[in-house]
Length: 357
Ligand code: TRP
Image (cartoon, rainbow, N blue to C red; front, side):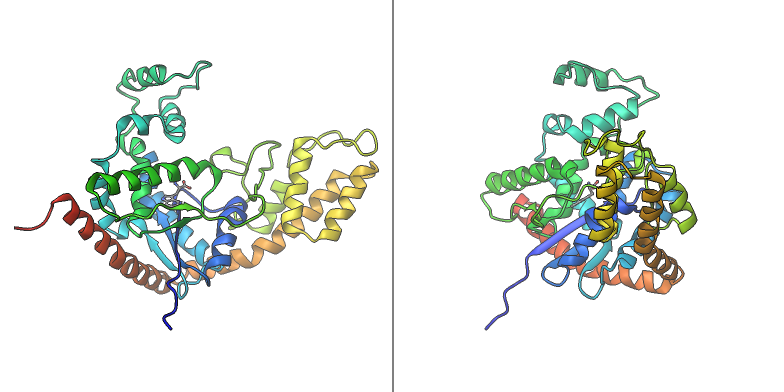
């Protein structure tokens, strides 16, 4: 009997800096958990990173560090295909072709574009955020500040990443679901325009249970590179301890069984991710009977975080020192990813009527 083909999974992380605990619990650890059972493809989205015009030296360093962080977290290049987006020239080629079927209106209405465009122009979201207002902000932008076209077509590029591999399962966070919805729309549109069945419609990978939300240390919101509230996998124990000891708290519970403020609830969320159930219970009980001392909670949390990240940090540093290994991993990965990409691209060109005379 033929062994059934594994479903194709694909996900990527932009190379815009070091990965943090949010990336670890929200992405890396999940990637590792499925690499035996699916045809997994994990890549470094350096072309997407270009949309925010990074410093070239930093961009290059980030590609390398994200690669080392993937490997250190346990993604196994023997099981999963690991590659760098810009190593696949078929991606920008297909990006041009797919853009012919993407509307500028639908791109302009994408939430992430509105956010990033306003950020680029130094504008806040107005009270009454209509499409007309937004269009005026973009078209009327001063010439020394601009919204680059790559930012507008970000969803096309992401759809290409997915469709060029014909991936059907895409693990992403909530903020990327709209991009995935657009990917399905573009796939459907292409198929029906040409009367073909080329692209499958990808869906979010369902890991079951509630999504992991990793909060930052500044009291509110999730851990994020742009929020400046991150615990990085590469941080050494001294730095981690300092960051945790400085985390925002409150004046402490004033009465038994009082509700928790967001900053304190966030510390408990982090403790739940990194510690054992009995430690969590100990501090929950102490909160409930008002005997808790946040200093003790933070000390415990810092040690539990260090226990998680320390072995990862050591592996990152070992891997970064082994340039030959890194090069081998991405060369093999690119070879595998290109095989499928070039097949899809040539099918697409045929369908669109582009073939040699
Ligand atoms: N846009 C994604 C993010 O910022 C990264 C990404 C690029 C991606 N291409 C992708 C994720 C394809 C999944 C599939 O998180």
